[in-house]
Amino acid sequence: MNIFHAIGGVLADQIEAVRAVNRRFAKPRLTMSPAAQRSLLGLRIYLLVLVGLLAYKFVTVVTQ
Image (cartoon, rainbow, N blue to C red; front, side):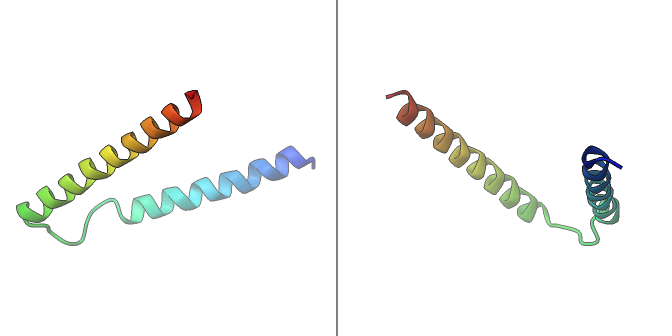
């Protein structure tokens, strides 16, 4: 058994653990009101804008 086989086995176990969690929570147990859904969408958009600004600032600082 070489090191690559061992690392592959560990990674496969971790990937399977993530897939098990995804299967468990695939269907939400709670229902959300439309207002809550819109609020969460707004938060997602806000976070994407912040990440975009962070990336832009990083690129401008690195290229100077």
